[in-house]
Length: 290
Length: 172
Image (cartoon, rainbow over all chains, first blue to last red; front, side, top):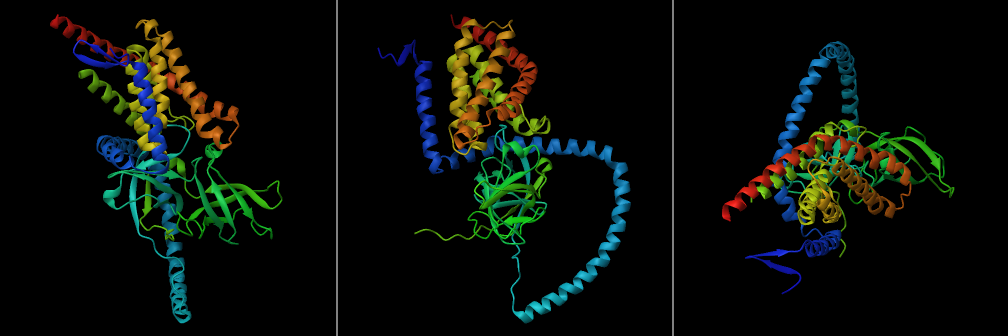
């Protein structure tokens, strides 16, 4: 009789040692295969999309409803004050707006004269709700409640409140996973808005609690970049669309090599309190390698 | 059959709880690891085989949703379930010390393993920082949750075992 498979009565059973060995080999194979390709992702993503995601959506809605109710009770008084203040602000802003509109009209006519195209293209966006976050404490990613059924695909950029949140790294029929730029395994190619100097923005687990991300490899020989400068996604990034706001530089250090600089960036997005995000459905145009 | 359904419900329920409800209950951005509680308690209650199978599926679920490639968490949790199963011979339902000790050891070793494979290999060597800010808080929070979750798992397992025993006697 074979030592691997024991015949116990009528049923075949597999000893736990051999099961462990088989599953270890299976896991290793899966890791090797999925490291480069995404063969398994489609079926797995579809299955969990129908089993797990509906529950997450339900819990997310319930949790959102409960926290809204509790916030409502607490905030009515402060909201009344804020309302009065905001009304004043609206009055002043309306005035400012009319003036700006006049300026814009003038700008448009001038642009037409100069035959310049719009400076920034308007991207197409889809709103999505966050339904769950990473089950571990090491990386920072979350899932949203829209997927291929809504026309999303891998590498689409995700923004919220005018700033970059991250990009889609895995997608199922009714959900997608977004890896945020504060995650320790994320790197974004960015540039300073004022001087157009390129730099690399990386997430860091150590700084996550402080709400910062790091940047490095900033070549700034003229010493023109100062604290408070805006950092946007660069033109040369192959995943991120250009000119999306990442954050503001809060500290600059000179590297030991005396050529480049690194430091800290405060992201434009409040990652602690993200509820809804916008997915840009335009993809960065890349040159296909042939 | 009933056992499989119940365990599957347990796994799904804890996973959903872990990534949606505990996100709101996070202390200093740290969430507890319900998958470890489930894997290791079924490991020492039911033996190596059940531990490793439950660990495999718990890990696979995390992999599909949040892993960068499939199989990593599945592998780690599978071994944790298997090793916990080794202790099923000295496990008694009345004793609470062994389960607590095993779960805390499992979570610490899970954290250290994740650190080594995900961070140290990328050149992030400040082990002290990661240990005191991620691994240890996660283990402590997990233990607090264990106090509530473990009695439920134990009760359900006892009910299932009693039912299986009854059915086995019926056939004799």
